[in-house]
Image 1 (cartoon, rainbow, N blue to C red):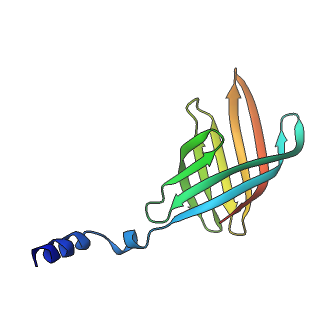
Image 2: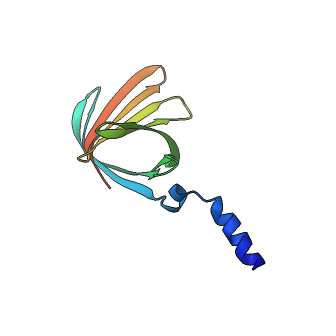
Image 3: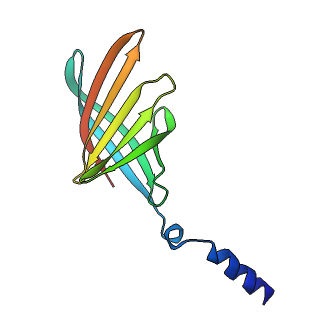
Length: 122
């Protein structure tokens, strides 16, 4: 009986949202880009993982794992990554899965912008 009381007490601290929590995974693939010297094609991929309750988001790519700021919007969502060197990357995903990934990179005092076009599938 004592164990049952302890179990009930523990369960009372778990919210219904936590029980229904899930990780939403976006598999992102970009095949076109534009940069300061023109555009082209490329096979650029990464994964975004979003906790449905806490809204914590992470990007998993060739450079490892990084925390993202998550910004929900009326018809999609955006994710912002701030690198250790101060560069900013923004990924916006529309409800239909179309996506754009923008990099605002400063290197040796020069701005090197680039934008990638593709899709992210849940």
